[in-house]
Image 1 (cartoon, one colour):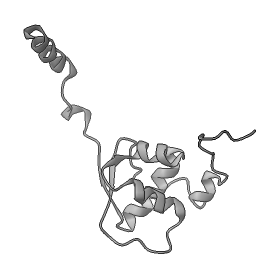
Image 2 (cartoon, one colour):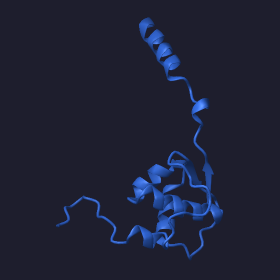
Image 3 (cartoon, helix red, strand yellow):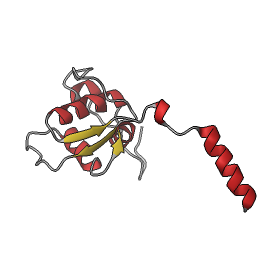
Image 4 (tube, helix red, strand yellow):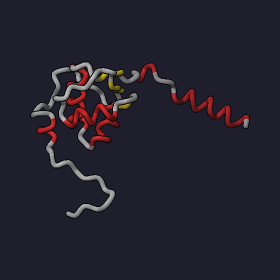
Length: 119
């Protein structure tokens, strides 16, 4: 298979190598919707390249799924790496808003329909 200009290249490093054989972090896994953000702490020189890549993408709030997409890695791999960064104090997390606290879509639709009818 030949590479085309402008197309992203798949990593030759296998996911189990990136996580050092770990399938879980030992902590409660972050949901894909959880938001993460890098702290102001200095990065240790001993971080592996994937950890550094995560930190560069986490300058603002970003979801676990978005980090996985940027790194082109499975979310399960990114969850393990993010758990490392949380443990080391380099990332802070915000859990997703529970469904019970989200706005009722039917109510929002009625409000939007009402506003549209006045325009």
